[in-house]
Image 1 (cartoon, rainbow, N blue to C red):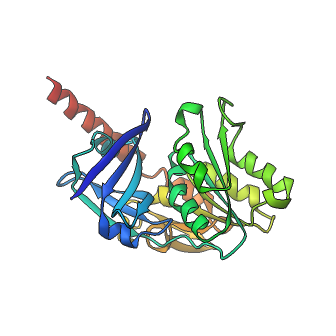
Image 2: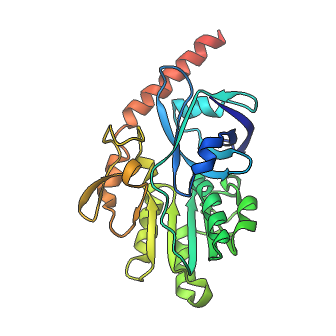
Length: 282
């Protein structure tokens, strides 16, 4: 079990957790994830590690309430425990030795930029973080990211704060501006459509671009095959070969179809959870 030391809402559907997990914190690196299980007999879900503190022996996770199991996780509070937390899993993101790195986060994917920006700063690289959401109320962890990078860009679809438009549009502007604004590498984490847009934005620019295929992951060990993704014409597994891959080599048509493969089962699980809650309320 992993005790929850801190739990706080970031948005109406997104929650931040800080867990006591010294062994995971000691080995964690940017880009890796953990597998959570809330109850006996329940499913295991992959959650990207948002941050880690080796000295304190803690890891931070951000969970968005989208299905039955994430609803159970988001119902937990400080002082309670998560039944199983296994990790760190997956490969660490490959970071350059020098240059300017731009991390792009969409929605709750912005959380994964915390440990990435922290590690890049430790290495002395120039950094920009671009975070986006539909509205101001859905932007997460901007205050925590600001001191970890040289430049923070906030984007909202409706223009309620920061740049009005998509993260890919703001990235395109920075690339076009050139000079110190132009990144040498881009790392994008978020919804599949956003990552595809980032890949299209940097294609042909010579800017190395990585995307995290964590939205595809299911069991996190490579056994189920649910996270199979085509990269450079070859089949790979997001959980064991990634989750980060060369964005210009990823077949997003295949990835986006696979990302929708379990929607029916997810709806059934949500319906069962809602029925259980109604029975308990009677």
